[in-house]
Structures are given as structure tokens and as C-alpha cells.
Length: 188
Image 1 (cartoon, rainbow, N blue to C red):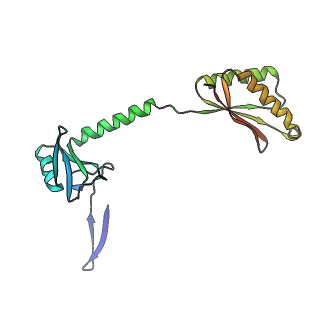
Image 2 (image 1 turned 90 degrees about the horizontal axis):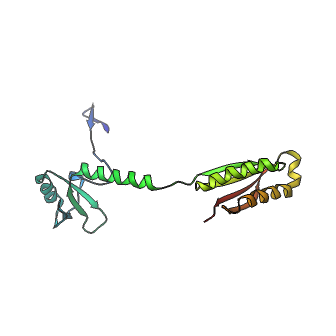
Image 3 (image 1 turned 45 degrees about the horizontal axis):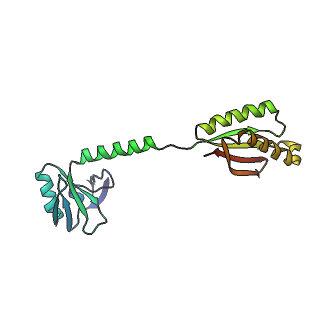
């Protein structure tokens, strides 16, 4: 960050460099009066000034990291910060790998769909549900079809009957503009 200022009518530039790698404070960034210190092997070293703790970390050729800033007094640990960050990133990556996102797949129907087409769409929805995805069934009305919403509801009910063994209705069929929308999830 550059700060410009005037001193004795001359323009001077001052370069300030602040090293904040993450939300954790390390080494000289720790400005607390007293901190509780945990050694590199996990043993309690007691409560001491931040400067004294930093000197101990420097003697051990390690870093002083504030791991619990809200505690009274704050807890700092003497560790290798690069290795600590690497381990944290690896744990986060592992956790991200294990979590599964649920996608919403859409199937579009029309009120005058033929039975074979309805069967094909139902088989496609069955595949989506077996993978664990939600299915959004959209039945779109065009022109004069809006006058026969009951036909659309019958088509959606017939679609659901073909999937009853693997699906459960998440949200009932409801009109939104010119479309009737229903959500299905995999049955447990």
C-alpha cells in the first residue's frame, strides 16, 4: 500500500507493507499484552508477554501463531506456520471432496404429450433420481392451453405415478405464470 503525503512542500511516498497471510495473526502481528503459550510439542508454557513468546518461538526457529484470539488471555502456539497452513489446506480439500452437492435437473412436458414421450421423460427422471439429484418437472402451457389447466395437472399426476416407486413429491404442482411446476426427490 502506498501513502502519499506532503512534507515541507515536497511530495514524498512511503511504502507500507503489511503481511497478513490469513485470518490468523503470526509473530510480530500479535500485539496482546499477555498470551497463553503452547509449545511445539503441545505442552503448556504458561502465560507470558507476546514479545517474550515471540522470542521463544524465534529461538526454536518456529513461528508464533495466535490460534484462539477470543480466549482470555489469547492462546498462541509455537509451530511451523508453513506446515500448519499446508495441513489446513489439505484438510479443507479433503472435506470438500467428501461433500456432495445436490443438483436440480429439469424435465419439460407439455399438456398434449404422448404416452411414449411421457415414458421416455419418466425414464430420464428415474436416472436423475437414482443419482441423488432433484427433478424439477415443468409443464408449459401455450396459447389456448391455459384454459385447460386440469389437463396439465392430470399429465403431472400420470408422470408422478410412473415414478412413485423411486420418487417422492418435494413440492406439489403449482402454477407460476404459464408453467405448472412440481419438484420430485428420491424416495428414502
